[in-house]
Amino acid sequence: MASNQQALRALPSVETLAKTLSAENPLPRAMITAFVQREISRFRRDILAGESPTRQEIETDIGKQLSIFSSSRLQPVINATGVIIHTNLGRSPLGSQAAEALTKIATGYCNLEFNLTEGNRGKRAGYLEVALASILETEAATAVNNCAAALVIMLRHLCKDEKNEVIVSRGELVEIGGGFRIPEILETSGAKLVEVGATNKTHLEDYAKAITAQTAMILKVHRSNFYIGGFTDDPSILELAELAHSHGLPLIEDIGSGALMNTDELAPIDHEPKPQDSLKNGVDLVCFSGDKLLGGPQSGIIAGKTALIEGIKKEPFFRAVRCDKLILTVLQECIDTYLETKSSNTTSKVPALDFIGKDISSLRQRAEAIIEHIPSNIRDQFAVSETTARTGGGTMPKSEIPSLAISIAPKHVSVNQLASRFRTGSPAVVGTVVDNTLHLDLRTVFEQQDQALGDAIIQALAN
Ligand SMILES: *Cc1c(COP(=O)(O)O)cnc(C)c1O
Image (cartoon, rainbow, N blue to C red; front, side, top):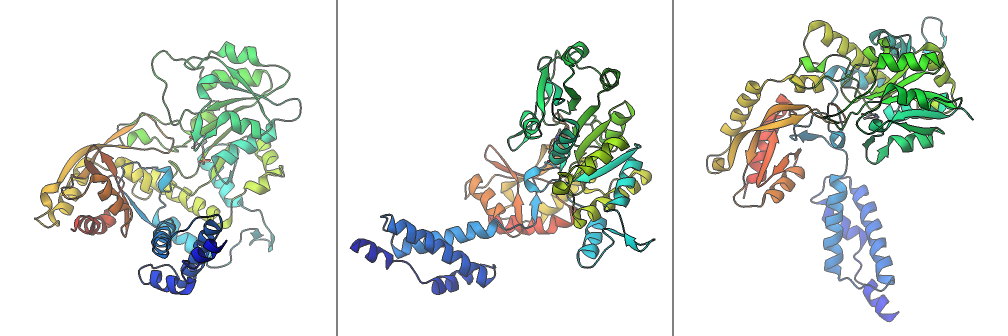
């Protein structure tokens, strides 16, 4: 106990340490104080448990923890990975139109659930639902928190009591990402998974044979983040829809990425299925993410038959997954942008699509211009190299887009140290380490970030 008392004296004063640390950290002073307090309590517990760190060790560690804490704060990042829809870097960036609309709605009142024509209570997301149904050329649509929530609520609505079997091909039991697997989603939704076929081949008869009085639906899941090649077979949507409907069952499709236009016209990449085509071919409901190829905010869009959409919206659970006014604003703006982009045949307004379509020569020019500004004494560590960009985020797994990077083979630090300097710099820059080279792929860097990227390069290589 006595040694505990002595060890406790090593604990620094919260105020003094917070003051020292705040000299080099931009976080609000009160935040730093609260954080230091928390860390000191942690050390106090350790000491009472028998440890005896010195004051120096405590102060150094708290300083380190503070800088880790500080860099975990959400902040802009220059994405130099070449992965366009990068789930860890916030998926699709919004266009400026959506961002401006967001500011206006966020800082004032709006007609979220108010009918301006009648002067009484109005329908939430009324505009968005009609707009979505119109561009998807289907009866009805709605939006929820994300595509996973869309899938859960569709399953909850359609699987009731005894009639809860969901038929899925074994080739489509995918893990969506972050350990989120289709079989587990089915389970949490009260559905009973009925697997059919083999990993590489599922025939129409496999589905037909699995239909029983307990079948609730046939579910198709787009293999959005992996690819099965070679000896493969799947029935067409048309055939599956015919089979489902002949048994009075709905055919549901989780399409994941949801390209509303032919993204393969922008770059030499695989065709990504469009929700419109699935609906046209007889799928009763589709769902897809709003922040993948649509280029919008995190959301999940459900579209298809009116009776099903209305039923879903009446589920008590719908309330738990509905979108807030900020998301609805951004989604509605994204759809307008999308329509303008489509009609004008340009993609410049939807950043994700713009990145897919950028030609190599414009990237080369930018790379050369950035390198030109690098001091000549360090320029021999730089090169322009050909890389492979990807759409990412659970889209077109096989799709590789030829791209270009500024590559750095550092002479005075290790490549991992260099990558870390870029990540923790201001602005943070995330690249890719390949062998002993750091690649900064320009396909996913906004042109207006080139200057900042150039400055970050000089800063990271200084000394
Ligand atoms: C990405 C994806 C999801 C999950 O979408 P979130 O919007 O992240 O919830 C679900 N299904 C498929 C097929 C996907 O590709």
